[in-house]
Image 1: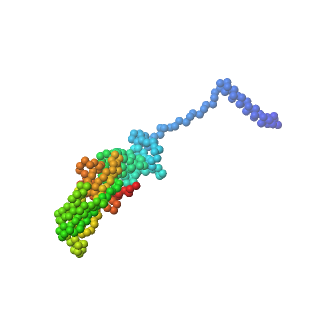
Image 2 (image 1 turned 45 degrees about the vertical axis):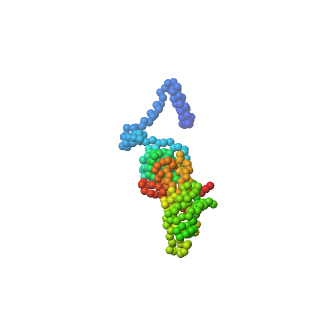
Image 3 (image 1 turned 135 degrees about the vertical axis):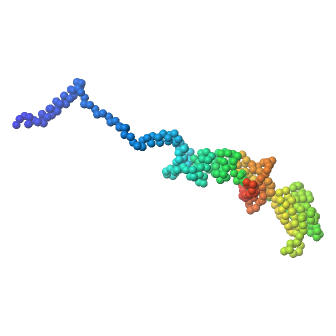
Length: 329
């Protein structure tokens, strides 16, 4: 057996070592390097059908649309500017911001857009009052008025409150002097006056408050067919008080009748006009309140069951509203 066959592994190792030394010598002595692979170059020459349309769409979108940075104002409604989508805090996904959609219940977007009003983006948008006329956006919406014009607002009657009513109690009574005449008594508190009169007479003839002088006029004397005897005798009286509209009532023999004149304390609950004012029953007033303003189109018509009735003109027609009398604190 030859040496090579017996020592093959050693011979192979030696050849490998010589080859490695040769390569190393070639490199360090300026020999030629093994070339590196060329970097991959993308091929953009293939035309994609939608590429042009996509480029045009991106360009147009950039021209007419923009996003507004989300504000940490605590508002529930967070909307995009000039983009027909919006999101509501606490709800997943986005919704289409169409003109008929009600971001705030009952108030479609088209109403806000009509007046170029951005308040819809805020949680309390319906309660805001941008034109400072005392009426909120929702009140202007309900009243079909312009929320950006201070001169355009619902009727002030919607902001009127009654803070209380003062009652002036008085009593009238008559007793017989003769078939044609009687003693007519007028009383307030402990003070009273007595006049002897017949049909056509007026009383009281004297009183400290001149508004009561000759306030009651005797129109006729009669007998109630359903009440026999003296108890059925009555005088028909007319109240000629300034604001009583000549109301008529029967005053029966020896019967004490109690009446009340009411004076309401009213308040227009609008910034800049929050000043209480008094109006007697039957009295006319203006809103905002001004004693010198004409015409006065509001009237304190009556008081009943814890409410006062206010009569007013609404687009040329008579209307009325009952105001709750606020309890005294």
